[in-house]
Image 1 (cartoon, rainbow, N blue to C red):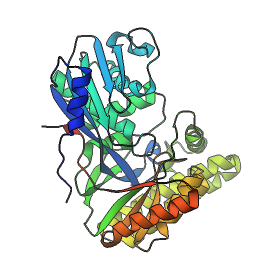
Image 2 (tube, one colour):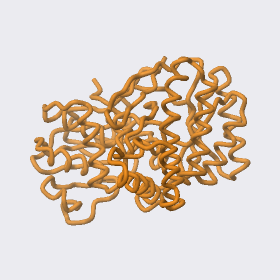
Image 3 (spheres, rainbow, N blue to C red):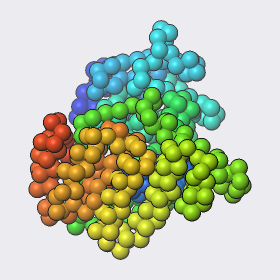
Length: 396
C-alpha cells in the first residue's frame, strides 16, 4: 500500500520566508506522472496507461490583492510579481519578461480568465521533488496545483476534466507547447495503487489495480531537454502532417487514431520518410495500449513488459526521440532478470526510463541498473521506486 502523504515542513518555511506577514489559506498537492505505455499518442486521440507518482509539487497560497500575483519558487529561490491585467504581455510588474518557471502559473491564470472565471491575486509559494524536464510532468503538476488553488480560494467549482483542460490549454496556447491532455488528466484523476487507462479523445478512463507483486521504477538518466526548441515539435508536425494527407482522401480521418497500418502503407509513397515513420509509431503504439490493458488486467506482466520494450524500439527507430543516455539506461534496465520491460517516459531525447520490475528483487534491480548505467554512460543516474499515488487536490 502507498505511504501516507504528509505536508512537507519546508513548504511552510518557504511561505513564511516569502510572506512573513501572512498565513496560508490553502495547501495543494499535485503529483508528477510516468507513462507506462502510450508514448506520443495523446495528441492524436489515442489511449495511454499512466500512474501518478510519489513525487509532487506542493503549493501554499493566501488571498492577495485584486490584481497582484506574488510567486515564490522555493526550489529556485526566485520571486516574481505579475499583474492579472498584463497576462497577455507575459511581463512582470516592472515590465521585464516573465521567467520561464512563472509562465506556468501565469498561463493558468490567463486560461481561467479566458473562460470567464473570476480570479483575484494570490500570494503563493511552491516547491517539489518532481525533477524538471525529465518526463515526469512537473509542468502539469505546477499547472494543476495553481488551478486547484484558485478554485479553492475563489469558491467556484469545475469538473476535474475541465481543470485538466485548463492546464492543457495553458501549456498549448500560453507557452506554445504542442501537448495532449494526458499529463494534466493523470495529475487529477490518478488513484493510489492503480494505473490509469485514459482515452485521450473521449476522456473515458478507468483504474486498474497494480498488485504489490510488481513495482514501477523510475530510472533517471540525469539528462534534460526543453520541449520548446527541441526536435519534439518537428516530430509532432510530421505525424500530424501524415494524418492530414490521409484525411484529404478519407474524410473520416481526424487524427492518426483513425488510420490503420494498412492504410498508412497505401500512402507511403506520398509521405516523407519522417512522416511515414512517425505515423507508424503512433499507429502501432495505439494498438500496443489496447493490448496492454488486456494483459495488465490479466496480471500478465511478462506480456505487458514485452509491449513496453516494443514501445521503446518503436519510439527510438520510428519516432526518433531516444538518445544515447536513454538507450544506455534502457539497456541497463532490461538486462536485469527482474525487469519485465522498460521504455522512456515523456517527450524523449532525455529524462527517464520507466521499468516494470518484480517486487521481490526490486532493490537489487535498482543497484544493478544504476551501476550498469554509470559504467556504460560515464554519468550517474538516479533511480527510485514510484508508488502509484492519488491525484491533485487541496491538502486538509
